[in-house]
Image 1 (cartoon, rainbow, N blue to C red):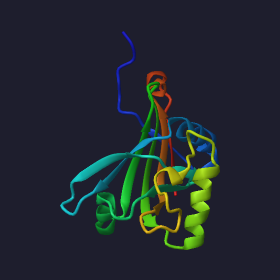
Image 2 (cartoon, one colour):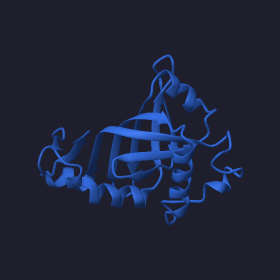
Image 3 (tube, rainbow, N blue to C red):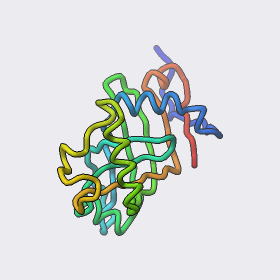
Length: 165
């Protein structure tokens, strides 16, 4: 009989650099994640989205007139979960805010466009009128917690690693 299961613990890492390589490898390979918001009545709602990351700052290209936008107007916090069939996971808890500066929106548009697929993509396939169109929005994600973990770690007693911003 194997070791009895116990609730997994997390090890806090002081510097994001300690998990950056693993974080980048996973989010760039998994690409899509579940993003949860909370409605005005405090009920969770999740959807699958495609963030792109620059270090600990994430960006999501999305429409500003969506249900998630209404949720974020009432509560700007989101929870993201990446998962793959090997049970490698990344969990991010972050504050989301709209990028309103036109130059920043264009820079992030180009970041999505210039990043190789599948992690990057051409936003023009969705927003035909470009980065200045009113239907194109960018959410900036500022995490206060990032966790990397894998099921194999639990089986071998390795603790998840958590960075707190």
